[in-house]
Amino acid sequence: AQRVTQPEKLLSVFKGAPVELKCNYSYSGSPELFWYVQYSRQRLQLLLRHISRESIKGFTADLNKGETSFHLKKPFAQEEDSAMYYCALSGTSGSARQLTFGSGTQLTVLP
Amino acid sequence: DTAVSQTPKYLVTQMGNDKSIKCEQNLGHDTMYWYKQDSKKFLKIMFSYNNKELIINETVPNRFSPKSPDKAHLNLHINSLELGDSAVYFCASSQSGVTEAFFGQGTRLTVV
Image 1: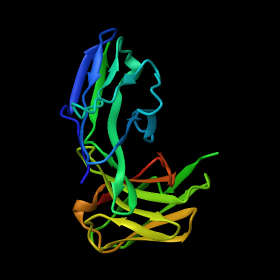
Image 2 (image 1 turned 60 degrees about the horizontal axis):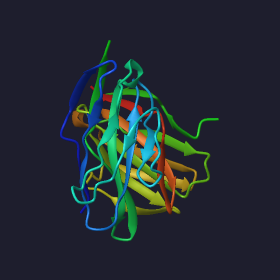
Image 3 (image 1 turned 180 degrees about the vertical axis):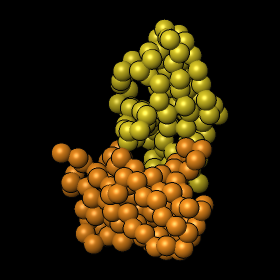
């Protein structure tokens, strides 16, 4: 079984402060991990994926297999970063590939 | 061009009614999904279809039935609606072997 845990339901930081959204996963195979973002009243969209090792909108995330974590970080938060963030894991369930989401973290960046 | 589109965007209906939500994707993907986002914003997969075959069916009530007339469409039919069905339902699609999923804008279902 695959599981994604985001321990923080709500997270508030001030503009310019560093931010870290935590994500831990449980999966017996080799996972593919993603961060999706949902801005207010908009659809979910992919923010970044671990295999790309890219930085999007200043956000980065490193896969730590030892700690089974994929935390999302940004050194200087901006007000426009306020949104709902979902960590997701793509793994195989039986013969099918399944995208499992964490419960989400609502990030609020205060002015 | 909208990649994944759902209709309607809002749906208010009474308990006991039967309703459908439509989803279409123009990305040429072969896999489509339905997710339910509850009031706590928890996102849970309900169904996925690959090449018109149901491949994942989470423990959802059988009042919910996905129907895929072709690989560009995956509609969600709900019979005998209950108050607890109120949620935002998201359709998504992906190409098998490529794990990024593209989402529709969501359908906010309110059962009164």
